[in-house]
Length: 254
Image (cartoon, rainbow, N blue to C red; front, side):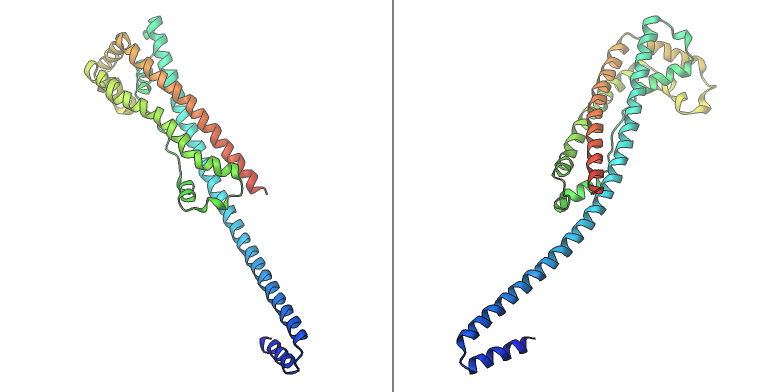
């Protein structure tokens, strides 16, 4: 094809038809430009198709990731609800002096929940990879990109509250329990069923000592307060997670 065009140009020059030569040369340039534009358009179409396929794959991975995070949030919220309920029960028992109405194991279960420290451990592999690799541009939705970028900040705030409880237990509550009570008699039988029939009187005494100790109120009040704050922050993260899942579904349905 190139030889054919070259032959035409040579023929026009030999015939000294310069007007036709320049017209032909200009037309040839136009054809080349059109060819380049068509090639670029095809290349762009192919790239857009590849990007779209990659975006769909990323969206599916993100959906799976945030669905897992939602389950993890719910599991930790359930634990906090158990903690709050157990502490409320302990306050009621102390106030009403109704310790005799509960079995020793039930009371020890309530006490065990005060010692819990639920921690949200989100799956963030796809999100982190998307942000660190510079592939965020593949996501078409600007709102979804913004929420993904801010996701770690939401998690960090929740973890700060969780860390408050962990540090409070480590630095305050645990030393108080160790110094004033038999940890084995308070907790062991709850975790090890074979210990159920052993040291029944010791277990009951440990429970009574715990409930009748006036300082306990301050410690479990602080714990339930931190749990309530953490629970509220967890609801914020849960709502944020649901919004991300909603945006992902909208993109997948396009």
